[in-house]
Image: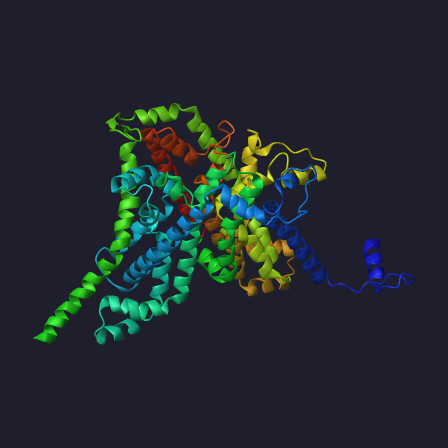
Length: 298
Length: 295
């Protein structure tokens, strides 16, 4: 309390000579303040690893291994990034990840919307059983299928290829499920009207369905991109040549290598999370909607 | 004539189109999800290296598995990891959600901050925290020393490596649980609280009697998701410790990976994979049953 008084006195808001009379605080206000402060503390703890990464990425290696640890670097070493990019073929990893993520997004979103439309708006034999089969793959961990999939990739000649990185993971039950739920809400009358006008079934999908599911497409694009960009287990079995490494595989393999130090590793880690954090900050609403609607992350 | 022909086609196209629309998905699911499950089962009865021909050895892989000490260690570690992460990420996520559900300033910003680790890759999270836990230059021990605690060499200690991985997981998963809980809390009708206020209930009573029972489906959902997630842990362990030191952080999936792709024992790894698959299935079914009964 005395600290508080001193602080207020300093700001000239309190005459110290007067007996202390604080403005009456309602219990509700106190509660809100306490909660706010606790949240601030929590937020600080959550941000600390990010700050630590940023701080290390911008220090000189000597400063990183200095006796006294501090957050703010003495001198901002922007050259760490170019040094790190020279030490490891990271730019190539980023290129691979971009190719894989972008092509995978196009393929996955397209086939999920198409199949979602079929499951939502057509009656056909085997619909329920097929849909159940697809849903049940939600609980199959990728890691269990990795051994046979390695043989399948080898058989197809897809080891160390973009096809091997993209195609096997393109079908994905969560997106299909979301697409079906969303498209079910589109009124049948729109589809019927197009059909009476003589539109082919695929044209109905293109001209009636696609323009009406933009929020769905946004969610699917964001999530597919995040999953593909962040994935480690699949590239680990599909790729053995360094020239085909993705960002995550490259980073995981770099750790502990003698030619790379912690400043460089944190610089590269920072570069690897920036795209996803930017996408997250811009499309946060969709991220949270998708998570709540599905509860999947893998 | 023409109109009847087009009518015939129209009828047919409605029948055929849905199959064409689902075909790419179905083919991919069959090739890379369904067939591999049966294939894993088949390989588990073979002796099979990464290259070369398989030879049938019956149940030998399974009997070897039950006698394999490391297999049991990896199973125990998986349970340890799950038990060490799920209750805390769920509870802390709930506490955070309860706080964010109040009328506090900057709510959106807090939510963004708590959720940010969820979107970052587990490799990046693993690398950042490996560096946080660095015994000489890491921030974690530095903070501990401020409180007069002498830190250990976290990731090189067979006792402390797993808690370090668990702590990292909490950083990643709390935000996820928080966001799901927040959605659950916002669905609790205000009228329930108003009625409780009239009866003179205090905040604690309202939490136990109203909030917690109403969001039970959310809790069930989070527990199911998190337990399965815990059992399948791989990326973090692979990035932070590679299962070491010794086998102190070797979890099941890591062990399957190591047996199959480092040591080339595809048959034996598939036997563990089959066992793991059945385990996850049973777990899921039990949880779904429990969740349904409670509702």
